[in-house]
Image 1 (spheres, rainbow, N blue to C red):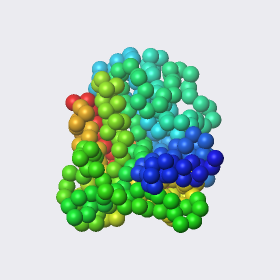
Image 2: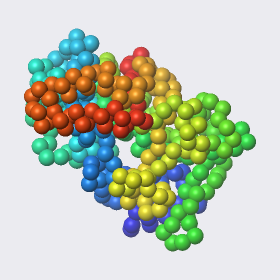
Image 3: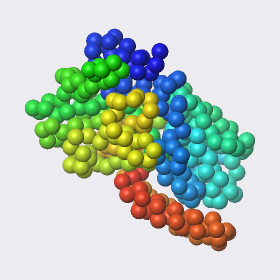
Image 4: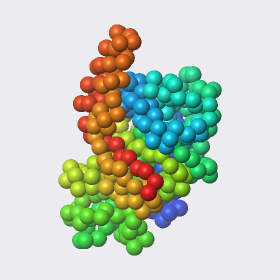
Length: 349
């Protein structure tokens, strides 16, 4: 049965409509026909370009971040990096190749690559010096000291769509469309009593639509239960709850195809990326509730600058003039091409 057929079947079984989060989960992560299984979305030939793929200087700067955490923990011999959603080109591998970590003894380090479903790594695979393991979200990992990295992961977590109506919330669900194989929005009452921790804290204007990623609290709870000491870094496009409500009163749900904003998110499921801007206010609130303390929200440019991106570029220029030019051009992209990207830093409370 096709992916569209399975969605139609799920809608019928649910009585006529399903949460958009269920639709999105199938469209992106179906084990045989989901977008992330069938497509190679990253890079120039894909649908979008994440910042680490612009140039390795991004990953080398993250290597400096990893070293700073390792030193703050008194340079333990056993140290773990957990990367969420690494795709086929893990940021953690570039960070581990960073000159900042060259003199660090890493024979007892552990690398976990956490991916739901498909597991892809580009040519070269993982370096044999590291004990590397692929895991699923929520896996029963031993407690560890180290770093959690998540680059553009939260925006792709399946979310419900809620609309503010008459001081209450209704839900925009997905039902069958007028034509075979098509889908349409269905507005239904939302049982807010069972989802109080998911709802926005602020009183938003009438008609405001928000995206609520219902699995993110569980993800944060899992991280809090595994990370004994160290730091988690979430890189993504997003903003505070108040600013997102002003900028996107009808929600920030979007699709991407061939580096351009796509059209109807209900059309051709499995063929396009689906995401929404991250409400970092809500993520911070959820993190605090499970024992993770926010160290603040920075723009990605501020974060990279504070950890020495310019110094990384200067070192590359000294080592190789041609590569230095590439790094210098990438520097402009990092500072001016990803203005809407933020970095949230979390530590165990």
